[in-house]
Length: 209
Image (cartoon, rainbow, N blue to C red; front, top):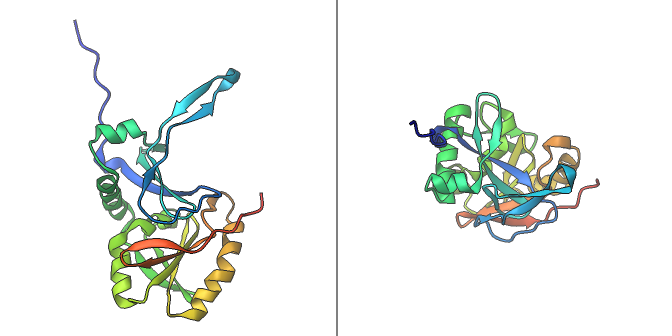
């Protein structure tokens, strides 16, 4: 008699991260807080409980751990993360290493009067918001602080806090970039990186439906 094969473990090299918008949220600090399980409607009026590896991050940004397959990027469930015996910080380190392997280390390039951060695939650019080593290096160059924005999943921008002209252009321009982002829309907030942490610099503006 044969024993049914166990479900294969999630391969660590498939672990990635994405950022998504949680409209209306305004979390003050950047310590990830796991989202509680929630009910989702099913056909016929039934419902099912979903417990994904999602974490409220800062402002209206939500960190979601996912796993890549040859054809899709799939939600990672909290139980799968627990089975890997990884806390969120360790899982994030693995996901960032995979991001670098697949899309390269982040590079900052001029973009109008700002700097645009990205790798080899702009659709993954917003994930570099979580690359604390990159931001620490930029902060060493501008110790007064850095103001960043992720209006779309394919657009990550920043400017030194001391560059008041660039910061003002972000204040006025980012809500419009967010509103016009369509399916790529992420956050209209501005975030300040200082003291090795993110906080909200300018709260998100509610976008028109």
